[in-house]
Amino acid sequence: GRRGRIADDRDRIVLRLLISASGDVDKVIVETADVPQELEQLARRAFARAKFQPGLRGDVAVGSQMLVEITFEGEDTPPPTTALLPAR
Image 1 (cartoon, rainbow, N blue to C red):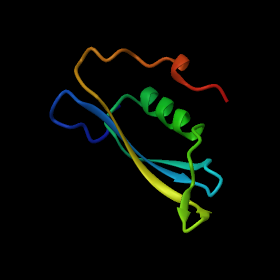
Image 2: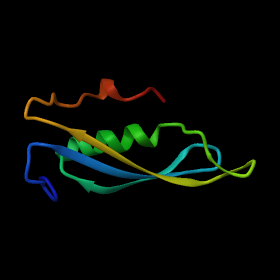
Image 3: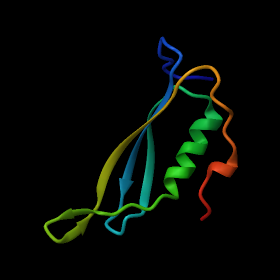
């Protein structure tokens, strides 16, 4: 089912990414998810595989956090497919 459904036709997910000093995503936390569970799982997996530039404190790489909002508008949003996931 859907959790925290908003009043208009937009579906959205907000993810908190915990990024290591090497740029890997250590953890994906779902802050809000107003989408079908399958789409939430695909978003989590896709971002868990992502690589980022690490945060810097001076010249030293440090762990960081990032909030990512993904918004789908309208009723014609196509269903997700695993082809959208990056290869590991």
